[in-house]
Image (cartoon, rainbow, N blue to C red; front, side, top):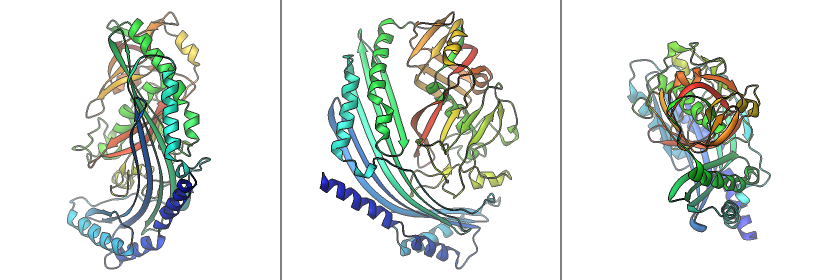
Length: 488
């Protein structure tokens, strides 16, 4: 154990030593020496990552890696060039500067590249850890995963294909721009993914759950994942044995925080991404039903406020500065039922004559920063959870979902329940199985007439771009009450 701990310390020191600020400054000098680009950005990054999974109580996979590299992005009037390499050195930086400049000039866009004007920043930030991820041994990881599995199985519910995966990483980075911004960061991030199938009466129900955070290994205790999964196995067994189908018709629907989160992410966050709205993502991750002219238009009721906030402490999508060196803060995308703010990087903001709101992120040094969400959630209201149940005479409480689909424009969508209950005369009246909501984005948010007080989050990996970039996010909210929507 002492040997493993010392090795972790050495690896950490090695990560930090890879981030040589002189390399970034040398690269900036090389990129700006002959030409006069609009902007040059350099990012150095070093990451340690550990992964372990168990299946049916046995070790399924174990891996650990360290990676380091850098990218250079050059902006000229007629194009943007991006080049990266899995090395960090002055020679590499000079080579990348030449490549990125050549690519930028080859763009020859008909419309001039416009970037928003932003304040320069000098900052150093990190996320604190009580129990450092770099000091966690594989024995610790295995003990944790088996402990979660054992606690889940204490209910004696028959569970098939039990799968648990723990992933943790430390990422050191240094960002520098020709405008003078300098940002150094260190982000420890961890994630638990669980996939389990409950069997009863010859039928099955599947549970997928994900927890994530920025911080140290202490977060695994805070999650209490084993207890949560044990409860869910009992719920799914009861769902199979006692659950009844929903007769198609109009009902009041109460959405739990998990359902509120996926709706906020898919039918607000994605269609409000500036690059989708302006067409860049059309052939990659999709389009948006929203146009620039729709700012200020009503999309839902006065209760529909959806926020994306990278600065939620300890959140899976946490950051203080984005990958263009812009300081992060809350973005109010839908505000009291109106389309209020798009998610922007400097390019999309510049095209619309606006300021960036720090939405530029990349999953790693080898991929270009693009417009991304961070932690997307419905703002809390003033209704108690019990009061919300009591307010429904004939409806369904969809606590969690097992399936979702949404079209290319983020307009037509479908959510299928995992855990759900009938509500009769203000009381829960037995489990509902396979309840389906098919609805448009304006109808979903327009039907919203009540929001509870407590916001809860679930972690997720959001995919976007080409090449695909999976990035850490939170999605969540309070309980939502939708009046008279069609369920089946």
